[in-house]
Image (cartoon, rainbow, N blue to C red; front, side):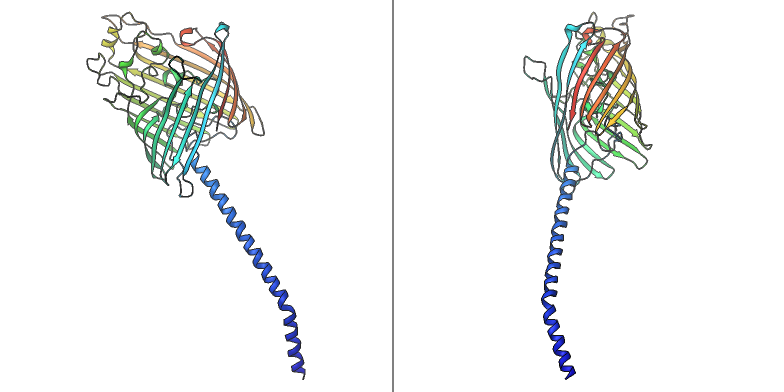
Length: 443
């Protein structure tokens, strides 16, 4: 009887508890399903973030060491491989930069000028985990037409393929990897309203050539970039114009516009960045620049341009120095044909600068960085003889002090002011003491 009563009690208790147990199980299952849905949503969000990050190219090439706060990044002239793509992060990304400048010569206020210097749209399309295409389209001076001074140009466009995580190849129209500025020319990446004179007059700003290049980096902190392709065309030299005095190579570079390619040029550049904040590097570019032009007096002329640079960013400070020197050989006969003209071809040209900046104030994403730069350069340091026993006198060396400040509203928007003092005025080349104001952006 006791056993029967116990059995009945147990059965009754189980019957009473089973709905509660089933309810708890149902509630627990619902919570598990909700958690699974949240995890799936988070995974999708992370994949989208990785996709956006990998698809968008940084204007400073991969491998560059950036400053700890807003301000210019340490330039890496020999770029390292870009971030590899995965099937989840292929796609196309647009980006861009631009600047508006105001220049007021102190002794010639009537020549004050405001200009939308440039507006650039870039694109980056990742095809797969090792291949992408990268390009920049630029509009200079706001308006482009037959009667205006504006320009529309392809600044670079190339296909890049990674052969391994640490090296790869590129082919197309590429920026020549010399100096601290040429590959990193966005207005947020340099101090002062205008790009410095040495890396504009001696190393042409945004100097680009068509060809094939290899790039890579090592575990010891060395990055490298070597290439072969087109070069300047000396047959374009205009001895009646001041363009050759403003920038010898800038006046004859071809920009891959139906470029003469009889004689290829080669270049090599390397950077060492093993110490945090320190960049030491240099490069050389050389090639025959007569381009096989028939009956040209300087068909065997050869260009050699080399540079060395150093940049050190300890804490809030940013110090940089660069020296570059170029030569054009076998121009005697060509210069003889230019007898009496104001701008023969120089035998040597050179330049150098030292610069210091200090990120003096920082708040939130904003910062203020005053700077001082001293430049020396000469676009005609020596000339080959024009006639028997006669040579053209060398041009005087230009010296420029630039004192100013960059105010970064955030890392991608900068307001600039500087004052430039020249040791001599040459209004034809734009040399003369002046006040500069500027606005720059990058996205």
